Image: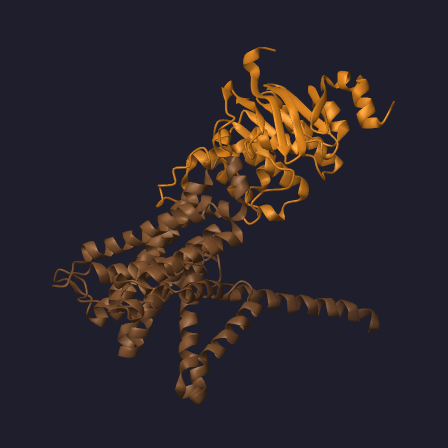
Length: 334
Length: 250
C-alpha cells in the first residue's frame, strides 16, 4: 500500500510535467489554475486533515497573498520574484498568526465561526476601501521576473514554476507530517487532552500549523494573482473557503494526495457541468450538477476519492465472503 | 519514611463548581515506593482530585507540590514534563497508531524539538528507545506493530500504562486502571503496579476493593468531597467512620 501511494504521486507529477507537451493553450491554462488550487487545498489539508482544525476562513490567506502581490508590485517595471514571493507568503502568514492566536482559544463550531469572521473582515477591507479597488478589483502592473532566467509572463514558464511550487509544497508537507512536529499534530487531532497530559503544550503546535498553512495559502494566492494578472474580492469570499473545504473532503481527509485528487476532481467536475458542448442550454445551471455530484460523492464515498480502491477491495471481498456463507447455508437444503 | 521521599503533595485542595463543593480541603502525600489508593463512592471527588493534581483543572484554593516545588500555577503539560504521569478512566490511546507509535509519541514529549521538520519521527532514537522500554515494561513486547485499536480491552489498559511510563515520570496518577478487566488481566496489572511501586509514587483511584486492599500501602477514603479516613489498609478496614459511610453500619 505504501509503495502504491508513492507510485501514484510520482506518476501524477510526471504526468503534470509532460502535460504541456500534450495539451494546447487551453489545457495548459486550466491545469495551471488547478495546480494553484491544489497548493491551496494542501494548505487547508494541513489544518483540517492533519491537525483536526476545521478552518472556514482559508480564503483570507489566499486572498491576502494575491492582494499583496498586486499591491506590492511597483508601478514601474517588473519586480523580482526573489523578494515579492517571500513578501506575499509572509503577509499571509502574519495574518494567519493573528487569526490563529485568537481563534485557537476557541474550539469546535466556535473555531469555525471565528475563522469565518476573520476572513469576512479581510473581505470587507478590500471590498469597501480604496486600498482594495472595491468590487472591481485591481490589475497587476507587471508580472514578476527572476533576472533573465524566468519570465512568468510566458504561460509555459509559469506552468513550470507553478508545478515546481506544487512539488515543493507537497514534498515539504510530506516530510513535515512524518517529523516529530507532524506526529504531534496527528496526536492533537486524535486526542488533544491526552497530548497535554503527556507533556505537549498543544497551543504553540496548533498556532505553528496555522501559520504554516496560512503561508502556503498565501503562496497559492500569489500564483493565482500572477496567473490572472488581476485580483478581486471574490478571492477572499467565504464561497472560496467553502470550495477548498469541499475539495479536500471530496479527495479524502487525512491524506496529502486527497488534496491533489480533490482539487482536480472538483475543477474537472466544474468544467464538465459548465460545458455547453455536453449540456447545451442546461450548462448555465452548472451549479446544480456540481452540487448533486458532490452530495452523491459524500454519501457514497465516506473516505473520499482516496478511499475508493480500498472500498472496492472491501466490497469484492465482502461479496466473495457472502458467497461462501450462502453455500454453507445451502448445504443442508441440498 | 523520609520527608524527601514525598514526591507529590496536595495541601488543603478545595474545588467548587458553582454552589457545589466538590473537594473540601483535601490533603494527601504521595511517597516514593508506595501505592496510595483513593477510594470513595461515585461523586466523592476522586476524579476531580486527579484532575487538579495533574493540572487539568485549577483548584479553587489549596496548593499542589511536585518534588518539593509549588506547581499550583503550572500548566498540565509543564507538570507532565516535570515528572507527573497520569492515565485516564476511559481509554485515551490513539487507535489508528501502532502500539509502538503510541508509546513513541508519548515519549516524544520529553524530546519534542518540533523544528526538526525534515527528519522522520521514527528516526528519533531517544523516543524510540523509551517507547520500546516502556512497552516492554507493560508487557506489550509482542504487540509493538499491532494497531492499538485492535488490542483487547486489557491490553489497551496496559498500553495506557506504557504510554504513561514512556515519559519517565516519577509520580503516576492512575484513574481506575483495572476497570473492566478480567481476573487474569487484573492479576497481571497488579503485578505490574507492584513492580512500578519501587521506583514511583503511585496514586490509585480504583473501585475494585479486593485489589485496593491487596496492593495499597495507604488508603484515603473520601465521601462528598472530604477525606473521612486516611491510613493503612488495616486502619481503614477497622475505622468506624468508614464502616458507617461505606457499609451503612450504625
